Figure 1 (cartoon, rainbow, N blue to C red):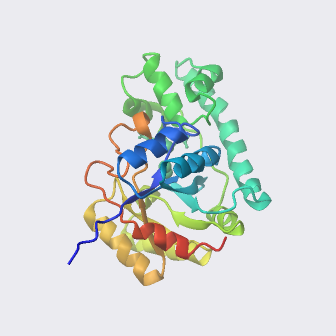
Figure 2 (cartoon, rainbow, N blue to C red):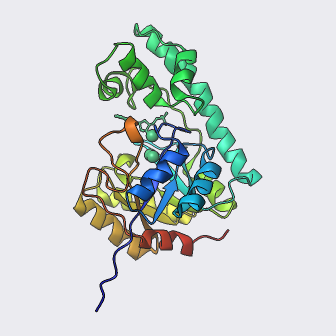
Figure 3 (cartoon, rainbow, N blue to C red):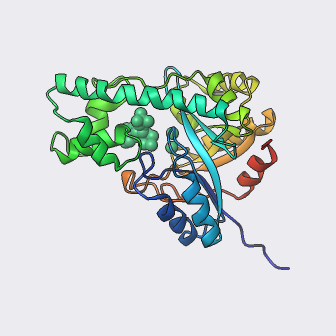
Length: 287
Ligand code: AMP
Ligand code: FE
Ligand code: FE
Ligand code: ZN
């Protein structure tokens, strides 16, 4: 009997088109070196890097899944929606994406102002340089604060200033869950809830009720395998997905040097995402 070697993937990765440090090509090269069968590019609120990533995947013989990670308004925690395999040039989706991008652009100068009021002097020009043409996000603020000596680490920058509820925090997303989910579905994409640990649920019952509500709106899957999920939580999510007919997916949330403790495909070291997650997404794709 021959034992089939297992195939692995990573369905949540960032490039320097948002707040990761690798170019799209570098990300795909690293995914191949890591022995992954498939990798999804899921930048925050942008689809900028996808074309280059797909071309690199074709050259290197690795399956690249075109994705995006939308910021969604939710209290008390953070709701990020992953979209996979949509026709991202569809006007209905671009309208939704345009609204988040505008909110993000409006937010950043307000954070600069808040920081100024706290005695921290940074400029939009410095941030844009830090983002190298990519979309400016809080990690760029954090790195700049470190570089200028205001804090000693990215972690401290978030802790002291930038975290949700922190003194320099300004909410960004304008999208309701329903609008984000519909936006992804409208162009044939598959809508998946990212890293449920960040939602700020009081207990698992509340988390399940939220997921059921979003499923009614069109949610199709949940990111069960994730760098910050412990085995018990992962198992809870997988069972919830099975009972609700949702896709089980997974990703590391790789950001390159911007989150050095997270390795591509391996998270904090013990993560493994089975290739079956790719199949679960493809099965639900209507595009
Ligand atoms: P933004 O989308 O601009 O609000 O930035 C959100 C991003 O900041 C997340 O995707 C993470 O990459 C990063 N982030 C959020 N909280 C922290 C934290 N406590 N430490 C480091 N990075 C963080
Ligand atoms: Fe990020
Ligand atoms: Fe996220
Ligand atoms: Zn992410």
